[in-house]
Structures are given as structure tokens and as C-alpha cells.
View (cartoon, rainbow, N blue to C red):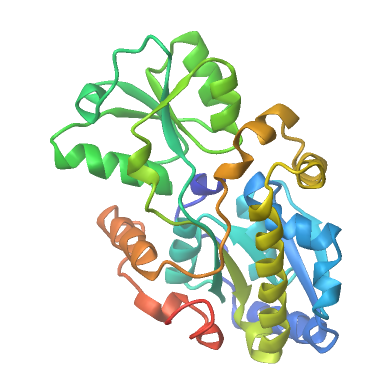
Length: 317
């Protein structure tokens, strides 16, 4: 839920020795079909938790260890340093990191559409994009996927607003205190805000943009791509279970156990998380173009951000 704050120029560029050590760590785990996932807890990673809790990874012959880290930057750095092999991320984080030399590639989408939407108080005069002119809007970062989409849509009609960079909880507090006029939030904070009486407006802006991707290190991809393919097969089975009944007791129990999010919020909005593995190539390319426009990266890397081992499986179909 906080991924998009971590798009500053990367400070983790490794020397040759560091890259070699990371590759060796990945190769050792790959021999054993062991995959370490660095994870900053989020309901958007529910398919990971369900696959782990229900024994689906074991069914597909992979030994998955989830290591908890404090934030998305720590996830990325754990993978870069060789401590982990895989992580879930906002696609703008992955695209920016890869463009800046990170030794990993995208192997799968996590979900689509993006569940980040614009919320306002019930009595707010804001009803259209035009009404955002000059307003204060809370959001994670100018380079957050949903913030990019809403900002771009507003600019197309000549409207600009002031972005107050705040994560979910503080953004809701700012709404309640009247310090901002609107907030761009994602689940479960959307549901938390709705249960407090705030309302979603202009949901169509986010309905066609992708959200979250899964990344794996080049070292592991080279050493044992078949293990990662089975890993994604397990995720696909987990997705099917969640999508069949996203509010089932066992699914909600797992979400609460792993994330600590309020149960009522999970029940309220869990059906909005549309998990999938097929990569939205066009949507991710548009994000790359937006990052180039913001001078976060120098160029759109095209399909180089995707693992070639997964061509025809999760992308290039």
C-alpha cells in the first residue's frame, strides 16, 4: 500500500562482487527449488499468502519462504542484495528500478484494475475532474500509478491540483481534519474510508490500468526458470480460489493474519481485488512513458523489463 513512495533515484547500485554474490545465493536456492519472497504486508499480496497457507506451493514442488520487511524499498533491496528471489511491487517501482540497473525482471502481473480511487467527504462539492482545480489532494507520490492516471486525466482538460504526499492512514486522517479536499487511496484504505462515510468519485479513471507486478532476480531466472514457472502456476491456482469467493471466511482469515488490516474493511472491499497473472504490456508501457516524462527514468525499456523465460506464458501472447 506504500510502494509508490520509493521511486527516488536508486542508491543501491551494486558492484561486480555484489552481483556475483547475489547470483550465487539465488543459484544455491534454485538447486533446491526454494524461493524466498521479500514481503511488506499488503492485502494486494493475498494470492501469495493463500498459496502459502493452503499448501499450494508445495503442491507445485516449490519451497517458498516469506521474509517480512518493513517497507517496499526493503523488499527491492532484499532482492537486489541476494537475500530474496522474488517480490511484489507497484509496477512503477519495478519499471524504474529495472531502468536504473536492478538485476531483476517482471514475471507476472498481480492484478488489474488498479484499486486506487479518489475519495471525498459525502458533502463535498467535488464531483468532476474540473472540480479538482486548485484543490489539495492526498496521495502517495507523483509517480504512484493511480496518481499518475488521475493527474494525467485532469491535465488533459487543463486542470491541476496540489498533491499532498501522504500514505493511506495519514491521508484519511487529513480528510477527516479537513486538511485536504480529497484523497487517492487503495484497498483496504478505500474500504476503511468508505466505512467512515467518505465516498468514491470518478472510479472509471482507474478501471483499465494495471496494478502490481511480480519480479524475480535474473540469477534465479537463469538457474531454475522451471521452479519460477511452477511458482506462478501456484499463484494462478490461488487466484482462482480467491476470485471464486473473496469474502470466504478462510480467505478473510488469511488476509487478517498476514496484514493486520481491519476485518470489516477486508469484507467490504476484498472482491475489488481482481487477481491475474497475464501482464498488461500496454498499460505498463504507458507507465514507463509517464516516468520518462517525469524524468524518473531516461527511456522506456519496452519488453526488456519482462523476463524472456515467461514470454508466451504471462506476456507476449
